[in-house]
Amino acid sequence: MKLQTDFSNTLQDPLFKILKETVDEVGIESYVIGGFVRDLILGRVQKKDIDIVALGSGIDLAKAVQKKLAGAKPVQVFKTYGTAMIHWEGMDLEFVGARKESYMPESRNPEVTPGSLTDDQNRRDFTINALAISLNKADFGAFIDPFNGLDDLKGKILRTPLDPDITYSDDPLRMLRAIRFANQLNFTIERQSLEAISQNASRIEIISKERIVDELHKILATSKPSVGFTLLEKTGLLKHILPELIALKGVEEIEGQRHKDNFYHTLEVVDNLCPNSDNVWLRWAALLHDIGKAPTKKFKPPVGWTFHNHEFVGAKMVYKIFKRLKMPLNEKMKFVQKMVLMSSRPIVIAEEQVNDSAVRRLVFDAGASIDDLITLCEADITTKNPKRFERYHNNFKLVREKIVAVEEKDHLRNFQPPVSGEAIMEFFGLHPCREIGIIKEAIKEAILEGEIPNEFEAAFERMKEEGKKLGLTPHEKSV
Ligand code: CTP
Image 1 (cartoon, helix red, strand yellow):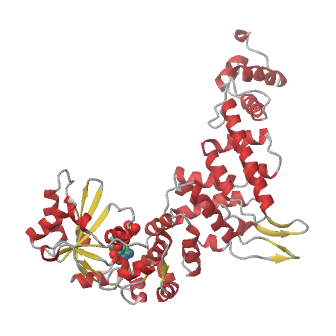
Image 2 (cartoon, rainbow, N blue to C red):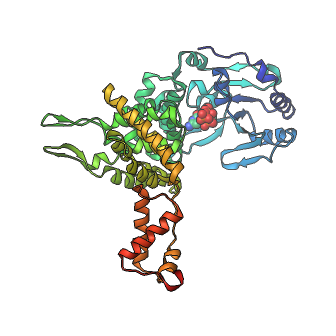
Image 3 (spheres, rainbow, N blue to C red):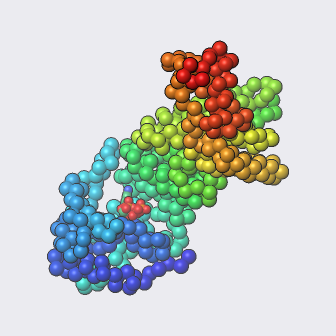
């Protein structure tokens, strides 16, 4: 891999000139450090955050820099952490005083005391995140790499600056970060580090759910999340975070009948989905689409393994998981629930003859999420039998074509009854009563069965017929 170690372009950037000037004026020795330097060397799309470490007050430095940045918002000061932030031109510049940290076993919050640059680099998570570039006049642009992080970038290795046991136990979130970086950057976690993660896995319990979910989102956003989830499983972290997925692991055999390992199947589905959708909530749906299979699994001779109602059970579990992980219990969760609940519907259609009315019902029930649902179901095809694989995919093509046709004709995606309850009441001179519901349902059924188009006139005629069946007669004014 070609690494970029010539920083001259970046250093000529007006922002870096301002930083250099200000550092000199206020006389606080400072360095750019962390992810910005790492990504610069890797030639990754430059992220919008720059971390600056100051051997002195990061807050004072931030205030001086802010004055020179045209259009910068006022400095945001986080007194408890001794940090300051400037938002400027879509960037976040974060200033922090160099520090030494000592951790208590039961807490994530360290005792912080001012320290040297080396102290500050020592307390960082990985050698590749401890790289610094000087902003000081005397050696502006000098590259400071005390742990050979550059070699680790070359070798694609994640290694902690200190004994990994200390680094991970100090801040257990770093175990997730290690796995997330391994996944995002396609790096290997060095052996001792991996062992330390396994040993410290249970300490993830002291980390806030929000931060855990943040890392899960990042893993799910990679092009191959199975890499991250496999590491989470192997290190024992996953059972503390998503035990419902661990419950899907394993293959059982009774009377010569085996079911598939639904954990690895799930990971395959998530990977399959990635090239076709960046929607992180759809990726969550893929991750959780089979969770109902563990609690519903039964062996029923002569049928074999059954997972009766697992979609319904799974959708309920989605709520519990989102609640436990303090994820939003809003329309995002409802979307994931809907995808899980409906995850087997399209495959049933695709396995058999693709039939018009089944497609209509599917569009009606999935509404605006129909395309996402089909994308999920296509990813769910993990059969290793090439003939079956091709057949299912071809059938899904047909399902997609039929969806377009049904949509053009009947607009079922956001179905509104073509004849309103008021119109029915007026025509038959009724007050609110159950007959209105019966007629509305019959009209909807006729549309879904393709007996009548989704149009007012045809629906109105059907309303008259249905009313007649119920013994209703038109109100005088209607005749
Ligand atoms: N850091 C750390 N331990 C953590 C979090 C962060 O040591 N648990 C340090 C690392 O040096 C990291 C820097 O703080 O590079 C900035 O952290 P952050 O912005 O969260 O991560 P980045 O490494 O910049 O990468 P990303 O934005 O992809 O998370």
